[in-house]
Image 1: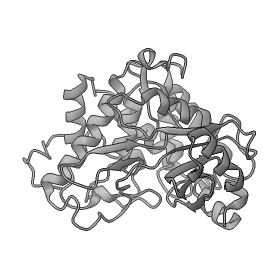
Image 2: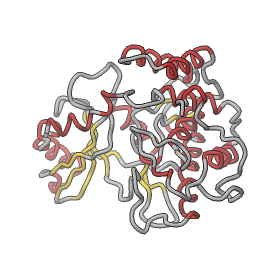
Image 3: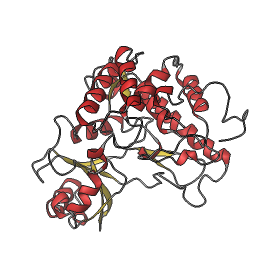
Image 4: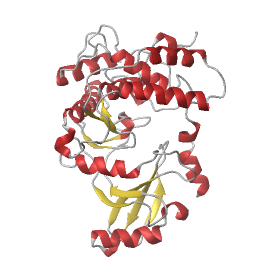
Length: 345
């Protein structure tokens, strides 16, 4: 069904040669739903299963969909405390006309909606899910880029200013109507872009559904996925975006991103931010600015990323606990929706 996107007739033999196993020669591909940018296919063969990642079909923006960066950082992090899928094969575009790579398939759950039956049923287990996710993010930020050969992977500081400029520019070029909340937040961020200590490895889109979680309790992060936006810079960029995605039961349900943490029993943002601060020693006094940037990035509402959202569909057409519990320390939420993003009523 996806022959023109996957060219399994070419990928299979190449993978078999690279791995020294003829069982990979004959492949079947299934498109994985949920992706909003690069395309992900599950591959099945007599030798086992794997995953292929490639850019979407059609014209690509300059420097977007850099598959080599994804493969590079996953190779760099292999063997560290941050779990990643092993890269099995990479091609720069000669084989099927676009760059792609193949990685091992990691067994586990990707949580996008309702939780799997029997998984993380108790509040304690759901709080533990939050723990392992925020701990994994903290562990990523503690890795020295030079120690894993990622020197020069990105500029170590100034990420907030660059992202404000990037998202503001894309909003101005792509918006179909004026939205005062978005425009107002953009003005505030351009006047005072987020800042803070830099030099860390930044995932760029760290959230629950970009991780594979183990099928048994206690929870475990088996692999961190989707490194397309990874770079070097201020670690609070990741934390602010993670707080944006981590929705609580009292929040408005987002229109375009999964919100499994709105189900009862998951820890609060305040709890997770405090745990991150204790683990890393980070000063979170500027976190709210990074959360505001996350809201700006997503346009504070639907319609922000039509090109990214339609990537999978194009591929198809081509072929909270009681206050005072350990999960709710109380106090102000450092990641609450900025007032400028709130809608009347």
